[in-house]
Image (cartoon, rainbow, N blue to C red):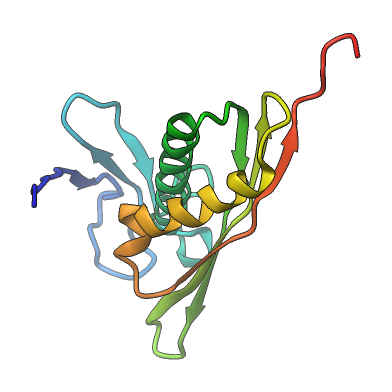
Length: 160
């Protein structure tokens, strides 16, 4: 077994001059940094006093699940001889908030739209989504359901 380590530094940038003297006295803005990468501007969800133009931790969680699945799927397609020419996933996460302010994700639904270069084995293309789900590092680490509802099409022929 190989072990991989990942680093991230999260720095709160939302001190408006009053610190956290009250719930409304500070911004939830922060920066996420990792070595040799541009920063990600974060905040909390706007429902929790966050900045709407910044990524929330919830956004980043959903996108991490989606990206991990996509990367595995593309790898499996390349290894199986299926040529993918386009891939877009409109992933959705559902989080339940409890009366005490706590909460948890209940599920993430992946809805990848995949375009294949030529008529290929659509059954194999579907099966590779199931394999990608079983291999995805992120999905395997979660304690909630991840559902994948792929739509696979064949690229329209040029001039045809």
